[in-house]
Image (cartoon, rainbow, N blue to C red; front, side, top):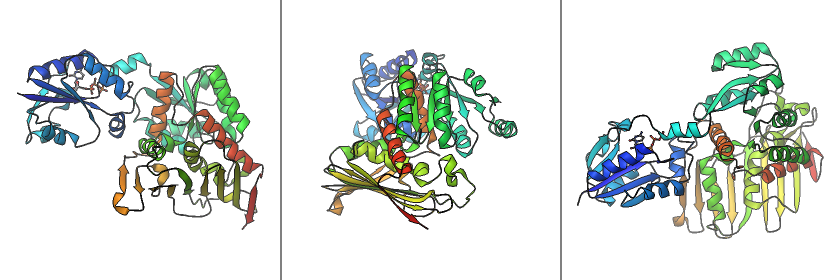
Length: 451
Ligand code: CTP
């Protein structure tokens, strides 16, 4: 009996897929189809797959051509599968010509001509028109975002809004943008969605105006510095059927998603303690991070990262939140902040600092073990699940590519196309993070050290 195997994403199953499955089956007696998992797709840069793994498997099943369906989860799996399933022929489309020659020592490798004129990418683009996303602001993060947007298909980042024409012209030239606007209303008329990359204190106003104009908003963290304002923005978004998403890049990273699921699975028992640290020494005191008028300080600058992790695992209802902050006397901003959150059955600490350097790791402790995420944990790509018995340690790795902003953009696009807020960061969680920041601004339960 001749056994054949082929692999693919099989997103929005089309005639090209059916043709290759038919031809692959005709080469032998038994056909195994490997469908790529969501995680594997993300790690190999396919960020815009429209259908879930289950839907894609169901569609392959419905063709009646596969004798067996397996899931492809990691790089290098093909060799193991070929050995495990005693495969005689590996089949793939001609778009992969020569790319799988390394499998030749294990079985025959056949490249079949690709069906012309159809692909999942085209179907996705037809289904969801390309999103025209404009950038609001031209600072450091805006530039990083433009670079990262090249890794996400289905979105055009070609327009920018700002106040200084000279700087905007330079940005357009250096980053290949089509045009800039200094009039916000005109800018909004030209886009479907915006990425708000302004100083924190301006997020509310610019996001609100964009939402009222019917545009989806991806807003840098923290969305606003007040609970009520963040809530108001989400209310407007819901009323108008728009997506508002807070750009905390960590929560959209594939490894972080895995981390949360594993932590919640009970493998370390009940979570009792979380300790997460993020410090970034900023020496240039002229930057907005040191300007109280622009919402400077370590909690507003970095708090969103540990707070989102804590919130995802322990929820939005701590009984008490305490702040211990080291203040700079001149401008009164927090150079360091330790936020302790007391939950009914657990305690968590978020340590942040822009004037102090600490080990940037994170430990999630439970009654049966703990999860250790080494620095920089907020660019999550590796963690260990540890127990009393060191021999039981498990290690998890999922790559974090580039600056990571591609993940938040891909998720934003997915939410717009599916008309669903991402589960990776809910509006409740964003509103709660604003509340934690607001309470500190109002000096609630705060102890200050002046240096
Ligand atoms: N395939 C084909 N003819 C097409 C499209 C795909 O023969 N017109 C083959 C691919 O070569 C591969 C298999 O179908 O062997 C699964 O491909 P997949 O990547 O899932 O489909 P694409 O349409 O190429 O997806 P995308 O546009 O996302 O790359």
